[in-house]
Image (tube, rainbow, N blue to C red):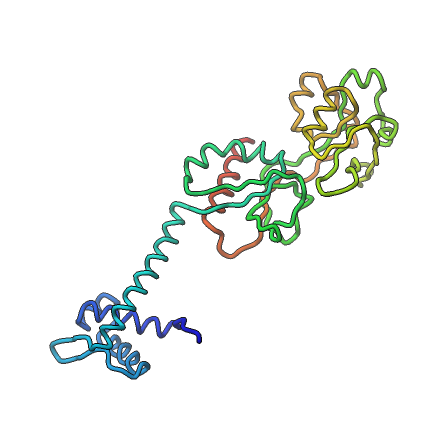
Length: 305
């Protein structure tokens, strides 16, 4: 049996509770912002629906019947519980609480999440950030994540996506020592004759084919080499040791380019692609804790530009 109240039942019961508290139709009507006659009609309709008298009425006094007293005590407790629940929800908007489950590429965590953590945890002590660092592209909804940070080209079309940073590009790089020993490629397809440090998307069996841009179109080159990693930091470390040519994101190696430890190659064919985004499922009402985290990320991203 469905025991949930419809809006009319709720309004009638609320009217009865206020009359029972005030033991006066005029005072209760003033509190509720209705006329005494309208209030009397609402209580009368409730009595008709229940088939029992709840109030004794005279021209001077209002008192509760035995049944009315029983209903008043139970209904008042329920109303207070409901009011407390609503108050708690409203309070959570002012001081967000709860857990936000985050899935993020490692590079996105280093650039956008790590810098905000100290201030965020101080400002929102009741929020728990459950952060998974993983370069695999997972189904956010199926894996029950609230939000993800990833590059634009791997965001599902039904996700809400908010840009965090500028476009990125990958560039082939090598140490001066490697180039002295093996020479320098003059076209991306020359890479098939070089030792390359390859990377594999987590969860996939084949290494990533390096992508370049020519004549208004992208093309890929399947490179070979002695090492395959599922972690880009490890691939960069091997590149810095002169083992082979790497293919990192340009803005992760700025200091190595500036110092001359790495030499950029094939830049003519290295075009930008969509950068890092926050993405999350579309929702009518966003949890305050999630909204606070997204706002903090966006504010931090603006400061880092």
